[in-house]
Length: 132
Image (tube, rainbow, N blue to C red; front, side, top):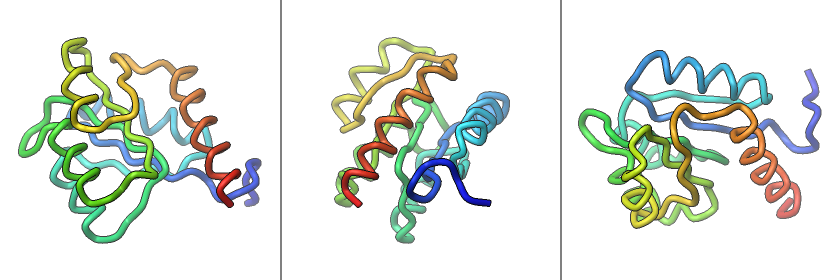
């Protein structure tokens, strides 16, 4: 059960209220050898960080019940989670500004392409290997 990358498998958090979008992202992350967790709103994502969980990459949708993606990004960053790569995801191109102002590292339009996700993970993995 050894993974192909040197460290442990990257830990990803998918924050998405649309079930089919969540399933697609989770499948892509599993193909990329990630340990992926999914929650359906920003509050649940923030709660995971409050509980002390850590992730290498977080993919957040913009419009969700209870707490939006940009709100969750701002709260996660306010907790001092600066190492995690936060990716805002939305079909709404106007969402990019909200995500970037909240502290996201990058914005990716929906539908997320496998190659885009793979490239982002490679950056995260290489950063983790350098800091280890």
